[in-house]
Amino acid sequence: MISVVIIGSGNVAKHLIHAFSKIDNINLKQVYARKLGDEALMKSNIPITNDLSLLVDADITIIAVSDDAVAAISCNIKNSLVVHTSGSVEMNALKNPKNKGVFYLLQSFSKEKEVNFSNIPICLEAENESDLKKLEKLASLLQGNIYHLTSQQRKKIHVAAVFVNNFTNHMYTVAHDICEEHNVPFNILQPLIEETSQKIKNLTPSESQTGPAKRKDAETIKNHLNLLSKSHQELYLKITQSIQNHGKEL
Image (cartoon, rainbow, N blue to C red; front, side, top):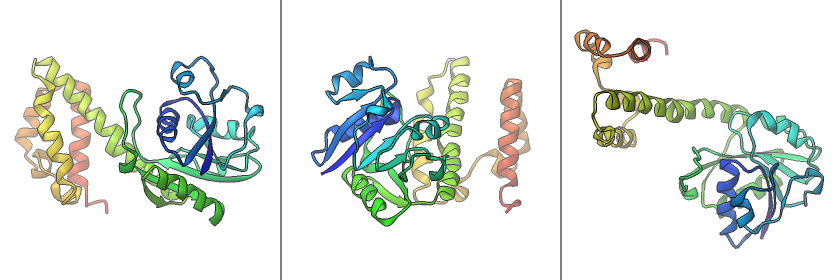
């Protein structure tokens, strides 16, 4: 059995708490939360503290807080192996006096949406082989796909993840606004969204690119721009130019 302490009460922390609580070979010993009144945590029957000096030790202590809080919180933790869950923070940002590592879950976590950890890439980093083995054991109990990435590799893949997730979702938001403005249900686009995501399983994104920008269809692009607000025109043009310039810059 592997013992774990979790620092944090946000989306990532709560999904980990929920998952760990259902695995017999994981002993979730304690959770740190700044506010003890969190209803979901209170229902979990896991010991909770809001005092870092009262942390119990564990095989792995996971800091699942906002990126800018990792260093400050880690300063106050004396546990044997402390890891953070950030994609954009280097392992050495941890300021705990003992061993350090990273347990980064490459997924978007929302409060209301349950996740299947067996589909999630888990990116690991540690200062030594022994600690890496501990992290591998924990990741394998979640049945996630394990990747060994350096801090620099993880930071680069985090940028890539912003493009495929956060920026793509913003495109959905723009499309949703256009649909609402013209009284068309957004779900009319659902089959297209699904086809686009399925297609890149067999083709590179560059190979699967279609549309007026790819075809350099100036007349259609002009017509589209005439239908858009000024802010959406600017966005449309920037993306169109990026599609047309792709390859030239490589």
